[in-house]
Image 1 (cartoon, rainbow over the protein chains, first blue to last red):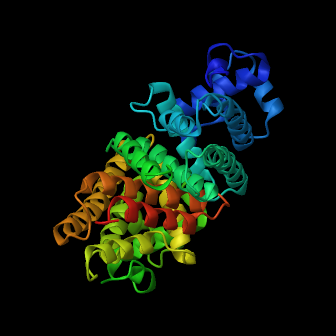
Image 2: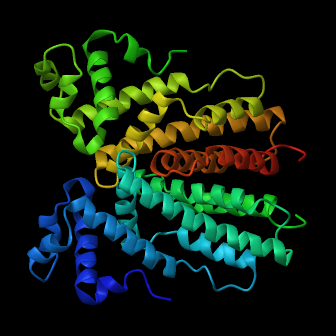
Length: 202
Length: 202
């Protein structure tokens, strides 16, 4: 399973090097202050290469989001657990980690800023629609397995997955936009939700 | 109970007129493209009045957020219900309304963009910390009343309120940044959560 940040340590090829430069520049400057010029400052090769591949900052950032989503797909532990309940726990522990490692915190800030672009930019909205759909489907599929295994009761997997994803989006947003550290509390309540409305025989 | 948008129809005094102009300009241009110049275009008096009161765009937006929070405090139905369970339902119905009225949708977009500024700007983070604290405390106080009334079981009001607030932040974020309309599903799952983990004797 590739680590999300392997391209940060040893990028392979020009595209990964541009992605690495974008990541660092985005975490350092934030979306509003980001420019291709500043991405170029983090890039070891000629800046003209970036201009050659991308028409502008948002072009580059949308490609960056696709790149990160693909890597994230490989990082969230969707495939390694004994039963569906443990599997769901592992995913939730990963996305609602407390405390959040510093590098994931910086990336989390960038993601909240990029998601906010979707409010007024359809290209970003298209991306986050696919992003949410991907995560929703993966969680629903785990719950579906749990129903087949008899671990979970006869619930609507899509509805549960939709809700859990909303909780994750809310928690990831709050943890970088508010000083109230609530992730551990939220994780505990998610546990209660799963126990009370998903687990069979509770 | 004042309506949030009364200042949009009949602003009283210069500050409310500036707030009205800010609201319209923010909904039209979004945060990134917003300038004092563009706010001035929505303002019926001299633009120099805006420059006289505010040092810059973020100064003005932070004041705008305070103004909106104060008005929102008066709009969310925190005080008119028969028992705590109905009271909580009314609040959740309001913040998780489906479908979202168009004017609240535009404002919701602006709020998601402004909250995202908190990732890299402490002044915005201070605001949203207070924002979250205010709503968390109000929800906790409703749950507290419900425990006293015997409607809710012996739960931790702060933990439940923290979780419900995170769900609301997640839902408000997703509904303006993704095409998947999930609010009705989320509202249904919140109902299940309340029934299964808050209501006495369930």
